Image (tube, rainbow, N blue to C red):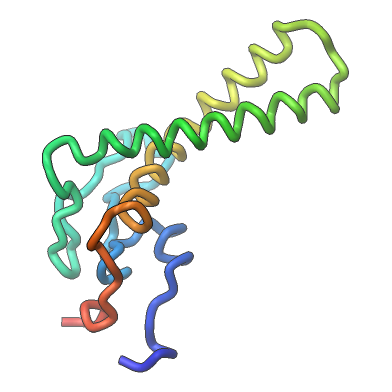
Amino acid sequence: MSEKEKLKMWPAIVHAKCPRCRVGAIYSNPTYSLFGQKMLENCPHCELKYEREPGYFYAAMYVSYAFVVAELVTLGIGTSILTGSSNPWVYIIVLLSVVGILAPFNLRYSRVLLLHWLTPGLRYKPEMSIKR
């Protein structure tokens, strides 16, 4: 597989694809689904086991925490600039509603980023991207 044929990292992260082959899906349904988020156990393309060890995805909570802090700081500053309000209930309603709406996004992408960037020894292998 030549350099041009290698699959790019960012599209694989955005579309929640396997970190090793960047072809197989990590989740079986969309981010916002009535049936919740169902994470596959193995990559359907290269058979990579996503949960590297028991309790592996507890580390994703730290990534999700960073997402929530960034969202809260951004929303707090934005609410202050847009409304100029000193009423704490304005901030509580805005911040909690947006964090609640973004919870499925945070869950999904904290796990995807954990797999793609924060897992030692798990790297992209272009030869695994070839159709079998």
